[in-house]
Length: 460
Image (tube, rainbow, N blue to C red; front, side, top):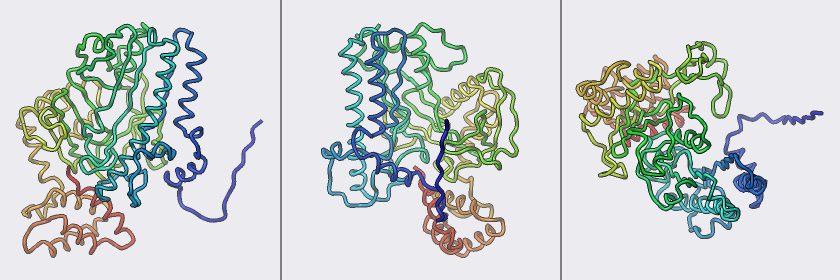
């Protein structure tokens, strides 16, 4: 029997936001027993209690925490209590820091409280490992998927800025019962989350599929032997990043009109693809890793805050671990760009991905081409009528946002107004763009345009 209840309100409302759902859930989450993290760990602990004596089992406890919002019960927050009285709460917006140092310290305290709660629950797993002596025959992996900026680089969160080390260098702890002497050691080799599946298969003596790009880490655990010379990583339409462990190269996109989703499950993170996105899909031939299955090729509109706003970045992590001083080293950049191309070919990247980053789809890229791409980044986005003006990079990014929200007719009016603002000193900076937005954008969408324009003004 199936029963369903649907209640309709007579009051018309707009879409419910994630924060509204979160506020409603917190009324229910009024004690430790109801916290989602505790519910998840309790199920995992029950599994261990029941199955610890059996062979060949696999358990994954995925708690989502530590993740924003940094919500815990008051007992966890007491050691980190402060006198902060601002309004930021425990869920910073995906934006740059505007709230000041006290807000940063406050949010870090809430994050520390959540980390403490996570450690407490992980400790319960370790206690059962002790209780049943599982250390002798059980592989234990503790890891996470990404980091989070808590004021570093003057940013909150992730996704909208380059993949700094605080986001991309994630913790990984492994106990392999065949190499217990490695438990107290630190390994220095490049690893990626794609290595976890082959590591687990290797532990179970299961053949690793040929099209898995990850590598078993058991040689790293046993002897600290390398399994990767380079690691390729990034977001779907952000920088394409590569590292050899010392240098990290972040290649910015040069276009935003060649972005596609390839999928057989047309869903975004929190919603289905709407009809307008599906209306003109193509059915593409299979990739090397799709087992002969064709996939949908669906054009994607670019995100408002393009990674191109930040430009291409190169860091020496040995000399500059906090990534505060990007390098300009054409030789090293070319070396890493060609390593990137090799991995893109290995991974069967679609042709437009090379065009997205201004890289050749075949062969290698030369130092001269890398130098040309660097120079082009300085002028890309500057309107033709203002080519002789001196532009701040931040102002170029703001202009790009402003014109993205404008019709062709409105763009002409924007340019005319900009001439009047900047014609005397022939310089275009952030203050000029703020004035331009205030004086040309209709009031009903001015706040939205200013929000995204100021976001785009951040170039580091």
